[in-house]
Image 1 (cartoon, protein in one colour):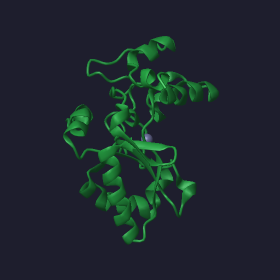
Image 2 (cartoon, rainbow, N blue to C red):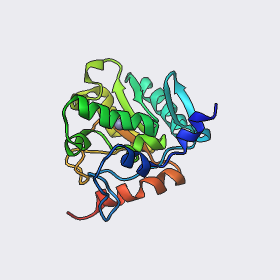
Image 3 (cartoon, helix red, strand yellow):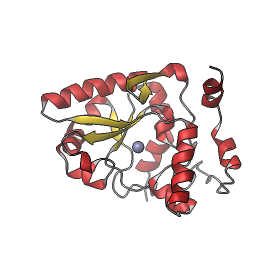
Length: 200
Ligand SMILES: [Zn+2]
């Protein structure tokens, strides 16, 4: 299959042009608050469970973390992992159109294509299997799974990307974590990490 390979190498700026999206990145490279990320190479991805791919090392760490959570009686679930640029484009523009949102409004809850941590294969959306009604909702912060993650995720090199009141101005996402346990991930997320540490 030739087509998926070509798609996976597509560069983000092109898709924004095609969609007639006029916003320009800031001096720090951010677009509507989000840092740019290119798409993971196919050979760095592994199917973690049916329909969800992750970076190989992030998958390994997540597997270990989930087993540990389970030993504490916490039912961690993976809801979303790697997203292709094409899928992120659809999530951003199609849903914005469906909900009659402007790009600015949409960017508070979803990254524009080319600007999602999910494109790297290192970001995960996590849920609590006992409280599926809190999936992808801020009420996830009241679950055992979230409290367990707050206490233990750092040990497995997972970091909460968009905490409450984050300086990027992205909506609080208690379910969205990124893996920073190898040199590649550290390098990719360095601008976002540095930005979150800077003085107001
Ligand atoms: Zn996410």
